[in-house]
Image (cartoon, rainbow, N blue to C red):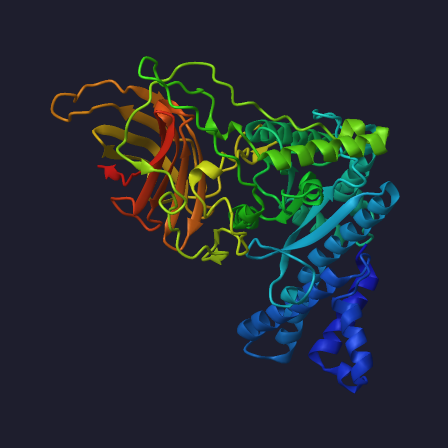
Length: 553
């Protein structure tokens, strides 16, 4: 796989780059040579290997200069060693890219391959790779012609999927690849480098149906693929899986084409534990692809002789607006009608109905009637990237979920990254200052509203766990020191980061009439939230109250 031809290529590129022997080549021909060497459109080219050689050469030259006081012999030795290591890693990526492309052609798969740089960022093959060496690659396998990888509403792979995932497993099989390396030293070096590899299987869905269900199903599916890879020779210690559900869309969920692209399985290979953590922390959810929901319908105001009633079902159960519902149902039906063979691969969208099931007590938080202007929390500039944080995307529609009021949003569930060996979650980051299982409180119209166990991860700005929500009605700090809460629940939470802080969006499931809450916490620590809103239903109308909790020390 590497041996003499690989070494010859290394020497040729070293000569061309270091000794400028390409300088005598005509400009047009030189451009073609550079494109073929570093930016070929051929998926079976040696682009990654050649970039690895070039980057490794530069690093080796610097090392040789430092250790050898600038002597020619040390420079050459350092450059050769660096080129060998850099090209070695790149050559393995090139091999896999070529083999995966052939598998995609054979089985008619929707395949996309991207590169991971040293910052953990996913980049396309191109200019940026000149500056930053690759540490891994991502492979996305999406639906094609409506055909999915699994049986409908199941984690069982289709017969065809079992075949191509088995072929993909062979591509990542270290022992099979090592057997093709003739030179014993290169083979041992490859096996040593392969021990550092981590392989993550991620299941993705669109945003149709229940978010929690989507996350659970996508986790079972990711685990099923990971188990199949293990059965075909991939070391269990290197395998991880995650059910991302709808939380990491790559396309707009507002149209059928985008939703089809979001239903996919992703294979991420990274070299080294540090690089694996960087990748997980740098992942950037494309929140602009989230669909806003239809706020819960306001019930008619009750008469004086009746109590206010409301469903105890979460307000977010009304998942998407009516137009999108009809579109999804029509989309799935037309696909199945056009091709009965794919009927099982296209599940019908499950739309929960927000039916009243019980009477709940509602509270007055002293707010104002809800309006678009008084319900939003100003995040400041919504950023793409800053100091390693996985932040919010740049492009937003006017009705973007993140920038609107919380009653247009719903919880977006995602599973943790887990080890296939023991099922334990993979820990990645520390916590934001002051947001590590801390407690916050504010009193609204005499009602004490508390959030306990507030914990937000520092790099990804995501919730480490759901908080505890408590409501003490008509609370008197002198008389009610040992009072029991009128409401105590564990709500779901979304988090979004902007230049003014981290938006902590809470969904109390309609408890006490509360639809949702937005709290803007300072990202660098503080004893008081910057601003907040509490949206609630009372006497058949929707109100919003300012909620600005302080930390309990």
